[in-house]
Picture: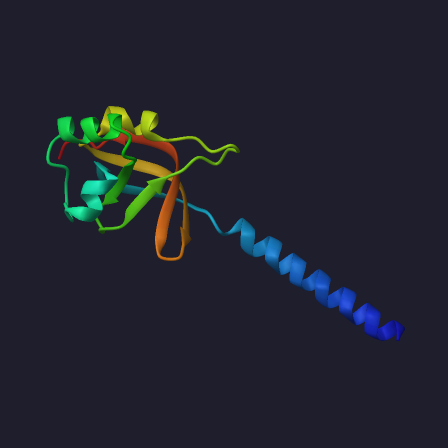
Amino acid sequence: MRIRNITRVLIGASFFAALLASGSDAAKSVSVNGYVIDSACAFTKSLKKPISPQCAVACAKAGSPLVILADSGTIYWPIADTTPASSQNDKLLPFAGERVTVTGKVYARGGSSAMVVEKIAAEAAK
């Protein structure tokens, strides 16, 4: 009986340790280039770039979340890593409709990608 309990404890501890280890790798810091675009236009109009900065700003001010549309086609939802979470539109609004380089921790779940934006800057002119 004691060996069985010890085995259960060891298996449980191993599972918990593996869970903690996998959680630390869940968010990877990456840099992506792309556009800051209104989320509705990115999905409903399948735009590859914003119509204009003014359009993206107007949509954001009306309450539509801004997203980062990477050159790869991936849409990153900007998220906060704080509780309670807060909108990230204020951080992205100065770059609405523009090309940017964004660095942050990326999370993926159920086919969606999100990023805790650590740094955002206008993309250097080519």
